[in-house]
Length: 154
Image 1 (cartoon, rainbow, N blue to C red):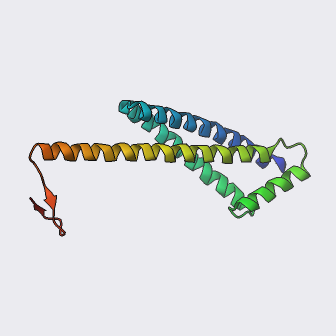
Image 2: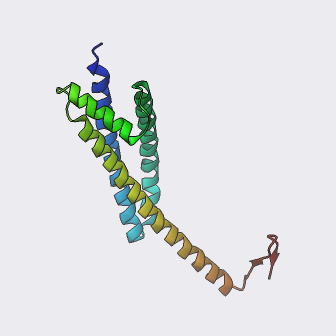
Image 3: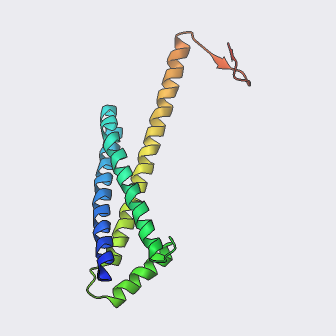
């Protein structure tokens, strides 16, 4: 087995993981549009694809972290960046592995931002729905309040 074979596999894994992140980002964008347009049924449909991709990304993350540990690396940005820089210095036949790594990190950041934004929209919609439900509940004369110990009283 040549010493570059594990690196080649690592690079292929990075490319596959980047593709999964791109698919995940597309789902997050669809989710964002569905939230903006109020198409709640689409969100349910997207949730299963989103969950499946998250599971795949978690597995890639675990595998990559295991690979880094086998290389004697700590799971810190500087340690990984230095290792990637050394790899490219010593083996000019390697494609731009550091570029692929940085692209992966950027995709992860985009996904994180979209997911956070979508979460805020969902939270706002939930608060709106809760206020609307409380208003309807009160309008129907079913005012229920709770005391400090959780008991119901009017």
